Amino acid sequence: MDDMKNFNVLILTLVLLLLASCSRAPRTLVNPEWTSKASSYTVVYTEPYIVNQSDFDDDFFDDKEGFAQWFARELSTNLTKLSGIQPQMQIIAEDSLATVAMEYYSNETINVPFPRFAENFQGIVFYIHPIRTNRYMDACYRSRCNSLPNNAFIMSGQFTVLDISTKKILAYGDISSAQTFHFALTKSDWENAVKEMAKNMLENTPLLIE
Image 1: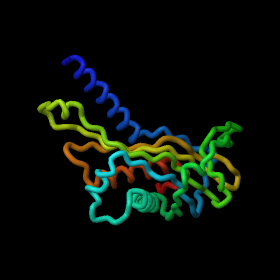
Image 2: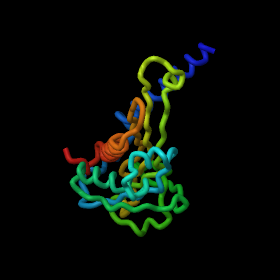
Image 3: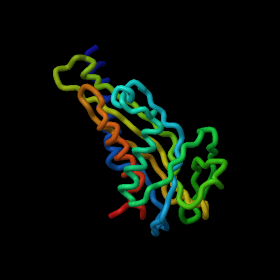
Image 4: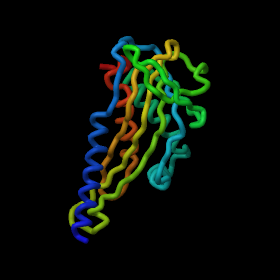
């Protein structure tokens, strides 16, 4: 039994280390042909999925917004600070997306989610889908170990940046943020998670202010 508990602790530790490393070095590729900074851009996203709604309600009990509205506002604020440009934000239904093969670089094509009504958008568009949040409890804590628990709050997603006029992929990849906490989530954990996601989205792109 002890060996099984130790094994479970080891597996959870490896998962948390992997998730934490993803927040520092996201798997993101930027098209080398994307060299000029646009004067505007749009962020289109699907309804964020939150595993424990009570976590958000506990930390934002005085906020009348729901998670989706708060996420959009917080992401827009951080992207504006990082790029110097306030993006247009728009939520779309998940069933409005279709998987389409689009050109990336050197005639390479990649299958990416693309809205069926893409003609409604212009210029540079970020598509984020899916967006998920989850909380992982330290196995050592649940087993009543003597050390402080090292719980993790994960916010993750996938994104694609498209040039609507040329229908070319400018960037794509996975974005994630891992916030650790001992006993309870705080509002700053949510804010820091979105801040890291915004940095990952603009990393190595012409939109990021040096």
